[in-house]
Length: 609
Image (tube, rainbow, N blue to C red; front, side, top):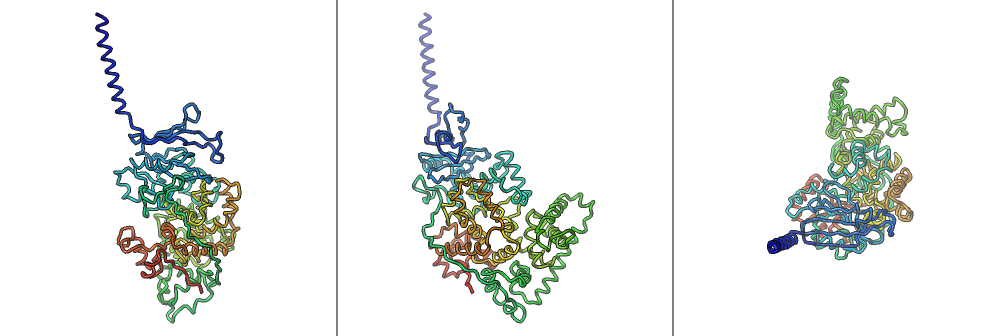
């Protein structure tokens, strides 16, 4: 009897177990993608068995990405799983040996190790990922893809694509966070004082995109068809030889360009002369006020007198505002007190080698202080950020006038004020634009810099922040700045200057055993060792070389302001900025409509006298 009762019980359990197993099989996620030959490199400079750890990557049906390394290895701790909804970006790159590697970033900013695909498979991985997420390619870094869910509305909000530097993302380590704060609060000290120590934060942080311009999705048919190609990278095959360029003489005549009422008759001719050779020192005081917008080019001598009188009154009204603030009142205004403290500290160390600012109790230092304090009243939201004193000192030296130097500073700041904004978005965007140009000019140099974790070009930050002020002598900077202010031959000519310097150093960089830190050190040691005329000739030659290419990539055209949109694009919201520039007389392409239709990148090439 006991046996008969036990038999049905056993049968019930067996059936229950079978049903449970079948249910679990139905519930277990299906394997969508799996790839072995994924390695972790513990030493990026070597690639032998002692420093590589094999593993595999897989994606399962519930949109979970897993990367596993053998649990019997100590480094099994590197294994991780990540819901694809938490994936923020993928950056695909390769070492000079041709092996692809991926750098994944989560939305929480958790550090994920680079994954090296020794046997290929990144293209197949991208295809599998696209079943669950959209991969949107950066317009300024073809190797970077941002991840969005298919039902997300984020793609319509282009500003979201700038947020990889959000606080929640950059908090990779405590030191990175501290460095980020130092960088925002004190870019002068961070970049000038200890720039060689800027390592992990820049290596990880300056790779994301920084422009809300035209984006393409990863499903675009222009994606590579071979696994060893890099997505979005356009190799230029039409670049011809770089032409020889000669510089001209500085502008040394002024009165002959004025009509009887004092109007400038040929402003474009003057700009061309300035671009070709700069300005003779005794004319700078007059010409700079036109280049920086203090005086309109079409103003008469009488109108300029009126402008100077009005601007003088306006300046001193603003100056009185901060001069009238008493000590007790300032103690309750921490922002103004902070601006004053920064200014006083910077004034004491700005261009003290120049006789105009040298010595104690120098009136030049007082003027430098007062103009910067008044600028805080003029633009209180921006206020004062370290490095702005470097922009003012040449203006004050040339004009020798408090009011004129102030209004020239406001004109200069119209060009570069975004460099000093807290978000640093403009600086990130410029570094990425510089990367686009360098990739077009010298892919081999870019690959080398990438292999040394220097592809972000963060060592150029100081150059772009204050327009090479610390890289050249004081007199050379006067010439360089007026050349850039001419607006010729294209937008962002300062980026071509940076390219000229980098290309000139390729032999030293590639031919030596450099790593990230020694590259930073080498670039810093170029200070005061560069020949300005050689650099300017190189920048102009690069421009001519690019514009002679009939298949110049769209991204390069956009960086240089050479892209002329079609009539349908002109009506789109994305074209509103270009239309505004056109209405203001700042069209990015100086060609007529007929010529622009035949040439997609008609350039504003100066007619050299």
